[in-house]
Amino acid sequence: MNGPLDHCALRSLIEAAGERLAGDWLLVGGGAAALWFHASRLTEDVDLIALDGSNEQRLALMDLALASGLPVEVVNSAADHFVRRIPGWRNELEVLHAGPAATIYRPSATLFLLLKIGRLTEKDLDDCRELIAFAGHHAFDAGRVQAALAALPQPDDAALCARRAALGGLLG
Image (cartoon, rainbow, N blue to C red; front, side, top):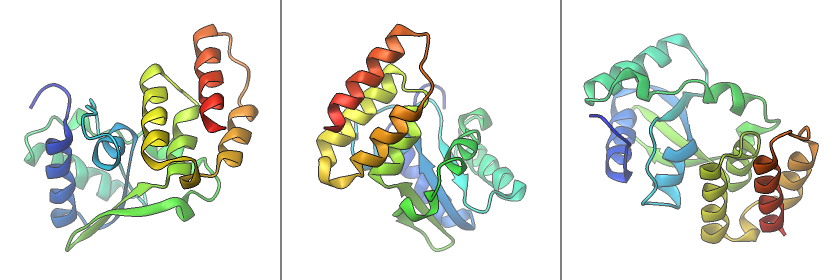
């Protein structure tokens, strides 16, 4: 399969992961958005990370991607780094899919927003807008997200400054 992954392709992969992988996993990024609150969202990669972070699990995920007809490059293990940098991230997980062998979690609304604010591309900002419209302000810790946004170093990129300001306005 080439090209972006849609809701159906992601759902199939997550269901296969629940059957064929072992342990606990976390889906973040565009894949989480597509399966949770933005069904028309497409993504180029799958940010699925093993909670215990073992190399065996990463390799099993790559094998699953290949068995599912996806190139191994569709698996993005870099998300692991960003998730683990957020204090208390393990307390911000919600079950997305429980299979017989593995449980796949998604981030809470707070964790999803915290993961997006660092890079905050236009697509990231769109994801944040969609989440806030879907879940509402009561679904996330706006103070925590605003504090994290304010703590980011001031960028030289005027477009990024504008996107951060736009997100700040959405937070209330």
